[in-house]
Amino acid sequence: MHQTPNIAENLSLIQQKISDYATKYGRPASEIQLLAVSKTKSAKLITLAYEAGQKAFAENYLQEALDKIQQLAPLDICWHFIGSIQSNKTQDIASHFDWVHSVDRFKIARRLSDQRPADRGPLNICLQLNINHEESKSGIDLDELADLASRIRSLPNIKLRGLMAIPAQAESFTEQRRNFKSLHDALTRLNQQGHALDTLSMGMSNDMEAAIAEGATIVRIGTAIFGAREAKTS
Ligand SMILES: *Cc1c(COP(=O)(O)O)cnc(C)c1O
Image (tube, rainbow, N blue to C red; front, side, top):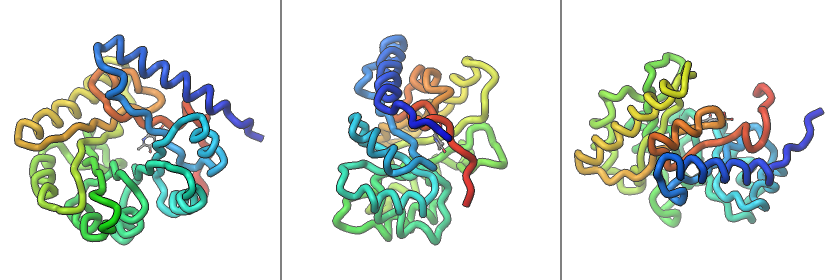
């Protein structure tokens, strides 16, 4: 059987690392938000993290996420969706989340905007880039980015905040940094084209330092908080 991880201790270790890396790379730690990735983890474990002060959680699988959002409704949690999005699922995503990091098609963005409940304010979104051109991963290519971003700008109920990527497994720290730098450069170009984006969602348990070195503003951490995940069975 699995032991319950010491979530409060893990969170405080990661916060310490975030602040150490921020110092090391000359950035204010306040600019880097820890997003706890709770996919496959129980509402009970999420509650433990919440009680330790963590308020932002991310989920990949919609049905599982909706169950937990309902169970945890009394808590003041900011929910982020980071999984792949089928167009028949946009209604639930638009209704129950505060952020979506994995938008990679105009059609999905338009549906999220159309279906966003008026009383929830604009939905924050990031565009997902596939920076290593991997067949197995979602996300758009760099050369499609400017066009998608400018079309999305006209949608009233979503707010384009920035970019997200899950780079390929890198051989070295240098290569990790190179991947994240290409995301940062893409954000800079969009801002030069008149966007006002402030979010780079990049860095997971194994590459957080490289992501912070290259300007991450949201790091998405699962394993280092909650322990290893069991294979998903559904
Ligand atoms: C699972 C997942 C994470 C967290 O990964 P860890 O290696 O467990 O920290 C981050 N981002 C996305 C998109 C994920 O699917």
